[in-house]
Each structure stands twice: as C-alpha cells, then as structure tokens.
Length: 76
Image (cartoon, rainbow, N blue to C red; front, top):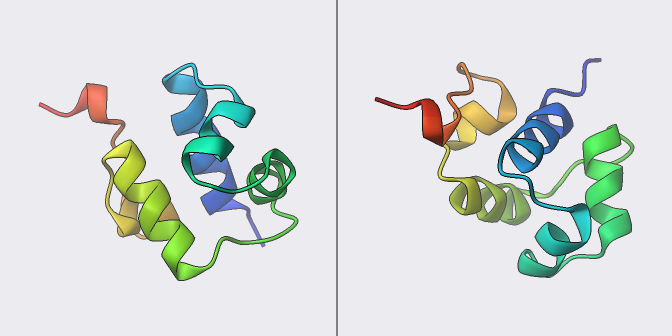
C-alpha cells in the first residue's frame, strides 16, 4: 500500500522548508513520531490528521490523497 499520507506530509513540510523537529514541536508530537508518519511506519490518528491539515491549510481529503493535493502557495 502506498504511503500517500506520509508523502503528502513530507511534501508540504519540505515545500514550506520546515524541519521535522520544528513541525513535530508545533504538533506536540515527537520528531520520531513525525518521521514514522512520513516513512509510512505508522499513521496519524484522526485528531492528528486534522491538526496537520489545519497547520498546512489543506483539507483532510487532500492530505489523505482522496483528492489532489494543492499546495497552499499554488492555490489561485
């Protein structure tokens, strides 16, 4: 199974040039937990998904791959 959620989190984080430790701190999780999400080792729970989506200004559908991810700076 493809790691869409983790890939999207990583893409958004890198696009905004945010280090894992910084994002993890803002989300009140450990850097290792964020790394596990990005690598597809574990998945965020629903509350974490909502917080991540809100942080990046994307919908849950975009974050989870149910619709095309539109990076906020690219929205018209």
